[in-house]
Image 1 (cartoon, rainbow, N blue to C red):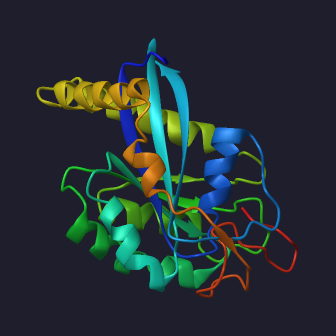
Image 2 (image 1 turned 30 degrees about the vertical axis):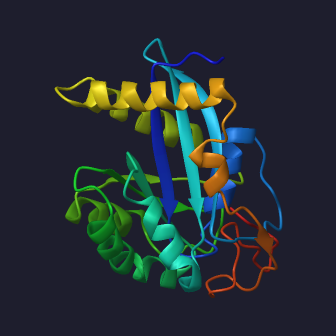
Length: 230
């Protein structure tokens, strides 16, 4: 049975095609999946990392960006310790939709959830949203900010490790440690008993055909005319 001190749930949200799935797979599997299909509903991956001398298990939930799955994905906000809101720096409409995503987060997530704004696909040469604009938006809405490239693995490890470090700090504060430790203990018990955990039962992983950069039928790691997904 795997030993770990804390268990944290991280949920990625944002428009279809911004590269959420590619970010998750780059971090958890060390690969960049070209031509990634659209996530249907919710998928998840787990990775155990060591931060500040502690083993931390991260449940990373990858949600579909399409409107028709919104009622499914909203239910995953509630128990999230951190929410990563992703946009594509080369696709203005994905940035323009950020206020809508923030309204959902405000409605469905814990008011104290850690929020991180991520501008993905920095490897592209057709940037539409300057870094400064992303930084200002994040500051205005009390979010951390980072730009990444799933394709080039730029800042991907940094993103998740810094989130883990911040969550450890929160968990060690007055009431956080007991809650996170209890969640980890409950999860270990379900693994040891051989009972299917809520994670596996709730996963709605499936892939569908991809479309264009910003449309509703695009993959989380969309394929553009250059065949780039992250």
